[in-house]
Amino acid sequence: MNLDRIDIAILDTLQGDGRISNAALAEKVGLSQSACSRRLDALEKSGAIRGYHARISNAALGHRMTAIVHISLSGQFEKTLTEFEAAVKRCPNILSCHLMSGEYDYILRIAAKDLADYERIHKEWLSAMPHVTKINSSFALREVIDRTALGMKPDMQ
Image (tube, rainbow, N blue to C red; front, side, top):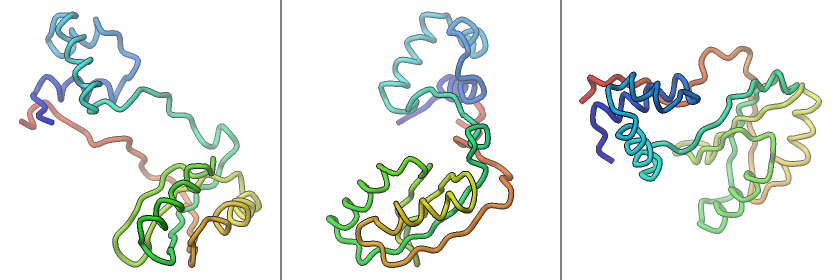
């Protein structure tokens, strides 16, 4: 995907305000409204823009605890990974899941209401997932930063 200076300016602006109108976006990046709309469509179709959503506070929903969980599986066979990943996708408390290199196979970020809720998630979901041989949980004391993407500047190109 080759992004030019204008594309990067559009993406950077949308990261700051995903609800900006096309007219305001066009003005900000120096395009006509129709040209801006065409660029936006192209960025969406290419996958550079993966969607638009509201970022909701987990704490506002009663989930005040974040757990970082390292998972080891019995192996990294295709069937093993596929079955584990399907189970992960069914658990509503898992916010993100990454296949890793190194000591652990996966790292999960989990939202829980409190320690008792995390114990429930551990018992009902994590321990029941296929092929899991080891679970190592750590609890976040404070969120320092939670970016959704890298910062971009139009002068990068």
